[in-house]
Image 1 (tube, helix red, strand yellow):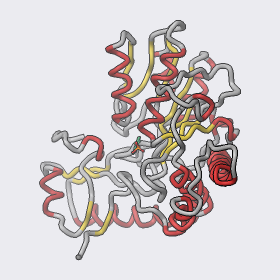
Image 2: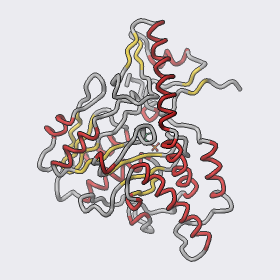
Image 3: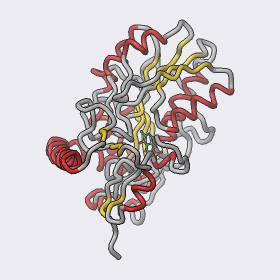
Amino acid sequence: MDRPIYLDYNATTPVDRRVFAIMAPFFTNSFGNAASSGHPYGWEASQAVERARKQLAHVLNADPSGIVWTSGATEANNLAIKGVADALRFHGKHIITQTTEHKSVLDCCKRLQRDGWEITYLPVDRTGLVTAEQVEKAIRPDTVLVSIMIANNETGAIQPFGDIATICRNNGVLFHTDATQAVGKIPIDVIADGIDLLSMTAHKIYGPKGCGALYAPQHDPRVQLNPLMDGGGHEGGLRSGTLNVPGIVGLGAAVELAIQELPESARRLKSLRDRLENEIHRQLDNVTVNGHRTSRLNHVLNLSFAGVDGDALIATLDGIAVSAGSACNSHIREPS
Ligand SMILES: *Cc1c(COP(=O)(O)O)cnc(C)c1O
């Protein structure tokens, strides 16, 4: 079968063959439950999980004890936002986010609104960015959390997350960031950048689907969150359920490879993206690049073709697999 060229890597990536090879034994021979503390099968699984925890922590400059394994970024965003809201419900009732967040952030906020929380949705400018000043103006005495992504999944626009984190820290408000599109693509340092909570997933960086993580430092008394699920009390009580050992091993391997190869891949992808962008501009009029021109992920290109419907255009492109919007909103038929 002749399949189209895949250009939809922000929706998902294939698993890197090197990552797959590292995961494989954990489906078969090394199948133990990481919580089985009484025999070598459990020890082997637990050691692999702790190794992956160190790999991810190292990439984020985090303490490994602050990494909570989840089923992906959707769950990590839910745990961060609803978990903090539940833990701090007697301290305030206001959360700040922005309009181009992923559904898993926006819909958490909507649910909290139904439960009586007040949410400020900051508008973005023409380039897709909010400013730290906007955040500062929106902070109220009853604000407990700001949730703003590092990089946007549709445009690649990179928010001024360090400045926003500083504003939050100075005002005693927790800062959560959905870093799903940024981990492994740009350097992130949770300590230097002032990030309190961070969500990520494996399947956007050549790791497996169904495995992600929330960074939530449990040694930091400011970072309070309650679990969403009750059960065996795994992951320091924050996320009960038997760990997805092969997935976690794959996440660790994928994030380590992404960082090792980042200097080379950033250069290669930027040059490919810029070449495509320049050729399209050279050959077509009325094309606009969406998102910020410089504060943008190297591998992302988001274009508008004036007067042309995105879905109709995509339907004519047999040779390439692209998206007119986030896969998570793909049932919605309006321009993003
Ligand atoms: C893909 C994506 C998610 C969801 O991740 P899952 O692991 O598929 O749940 C969340 N946020 C952003 C920005 C994403 O791109």
